[in-house]
Image (cartoon, rainbow, N blue to C red):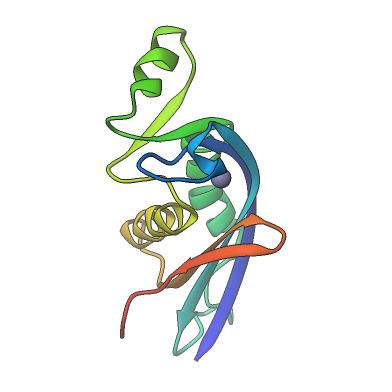
Length: 135
Ligand SMILES: [Zn+2]
């Protein structure tokens, strides 16, 4: 197997509902997403895929949709308040944990045709969550 991994930096805010800890309050992270793409054979350029394609497609989406946005659960009352103030929010169907964000980026990457096998989201320099589907 060949594998390439691209790191993408982005900033996001969030808060967790139904959670008893400091993360129940709105706060932000300088996050890093790692997208790992794997193939058994290389293409005609001797590549798994072009790093610049990952940057253009996946980083482009992260920049537009997640970067400098508040990521909130769809029913979070804070979402309505921010929207009324004209502030950007990105709604997810469940608590916007690092695990959920990893899954979000994985699903988008897969839908765009990348042979993605793992997405890791570093929430801090010492804490990361990963999504990889079972084989
Ligand atoms: Zn957090």
